[in-house]
Image (cartoon, rainbow, N blue to C red; front, side):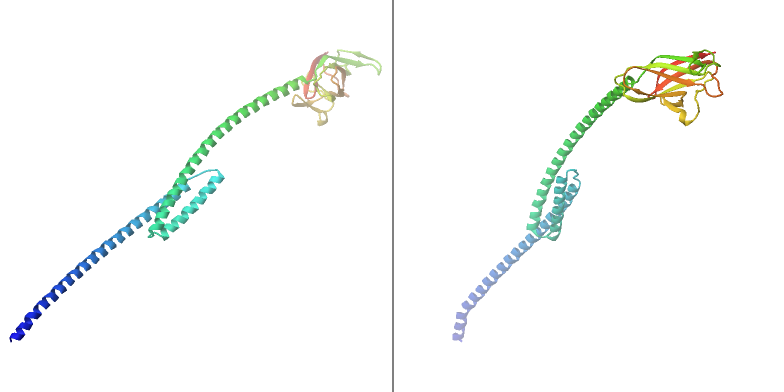
Length: 307
């Protein structure tokens, strides 16, 4: 009995140590497990937080890219070089938008896209300044062009007015006048004998004589001289009232009583034209108005009174 009790007393301290070691081990194990749990929890929370941040930044980048695309679309210019550069940047933005959607959970890609978006925005501001500068320059050039056009129009108008005045002066100055005009009625006795008369019933022909004035600026060459004679009853005397006996004077048309072709050499020259009585028709008594026309102008006039 004593031996057994002694044996039990010797084994008791060994068990106590074993329990102590086991307790320490369990305590350490629990502490390690608690630390691991806490560490994993913090890491998981960090990852979740980072994912949320990445998602938020991704949405911000995509929103910025959409806004940037809209702003690039609003850029308008007529400069072909700048338009080409803007189109290239718009294509680049479209590619970045695709990348942002494809790698929306990749922090590195999103960060890179954010920087590229900022660079494109800075470039856009440069385009805005350049386009504004060009627009200002274009407005200035347009204003200068309008001013020059106005001045040119004014000068053209002045030049046209001067040319018109010059043409009018030339036209007036180049008119060949008839001077010293006389109108005489004749009674023809025979081929070699004729007498002037004032009797209408005895008149066989009317002679118009005058001198064409000297004119150095008038064109030389052949001319047609027309005599227009208004009878006492207000009619135009003509051999035949047809198109062959019509002429133009002072931009009007009428019938001529006689005409004559001449060659003008810028010197004074005498002219004689005859108006003959028509068969079976005598001249009426009364006052006759006679006009001489050449080059569409009335160059002289006179009258004749027959009894």
